[in-house]
Length: 100
Image (cartoon, rainbow, N blue to C red; front, side, top):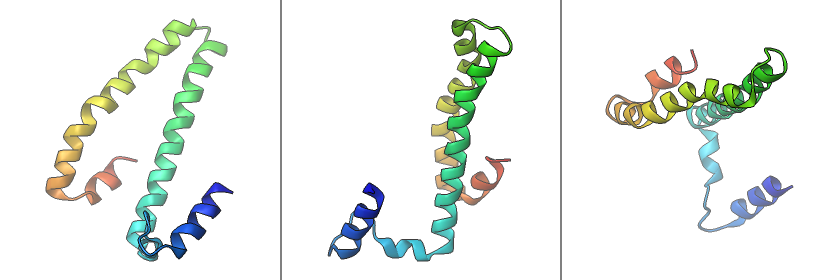
């Protein structure tokens, strides 16, 4: 409901926060859809990996949390560096290679 209200308000605004005409671009729409899927997969993975470790593998909650730590550190550590590379070389290569 909030998304529909947001779109109606933005469509009628003289100075929208999110210009809806950007979604006519296949590149913009495709990139946003890819980002949605990537973050959905990341969210599901960070939910189900510890759940599996605790329930199916018999890990303690602390050990399951620690098992997720390397991934979180890599994500936090490599993001600024990758952002600088994407600014220099363009995002296309990273948007293709990253999900693979």
